[in-house]
Image (cartoon, rainbow, N blue to C red; front, side):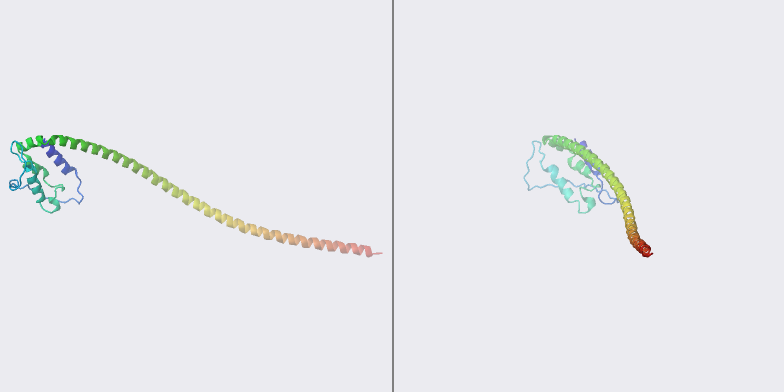
Length: 206
């Protein structure tokens, strides 16, 4: 069981991506001092004389006293979590106590939760992959629509120019038609007066 815990802890420390830029880290060394004892604290014990809290107090004390530097944090990739487990939980009596506390069942449950979480993350990753494909497709469609809009605007400007030219030609034609009508009216009056004069002149002859 301790191999499973050690391997899980080591995998957890190696698989996490560091948030900070990579830099050379100094591997922390676990102190060789004996676990911290609390003589004034009354603690329940098992039938074999192993304190319930003995496995945890020294571990947490050493973790909390490891320093405030980022490299000393338990979440840091260089933190020697496996060494701590070997030091504080390497005794056989701790293994027996772990069996009493049914930690193996808890570990199995945690491993199942990890598998379920991994499955959910894979599904979410696939969903994001589909979203990314859809996003790229929409971006391409928007780009095509923008190009189409530019072409339509160019055609609209051309039509506006053509309409303006047509309006100018229309006004010119109207002016020419009016001028022709005026000329026809004058020519008609001139011809009528000429014919009337000729008629009067022919009647006056003996």
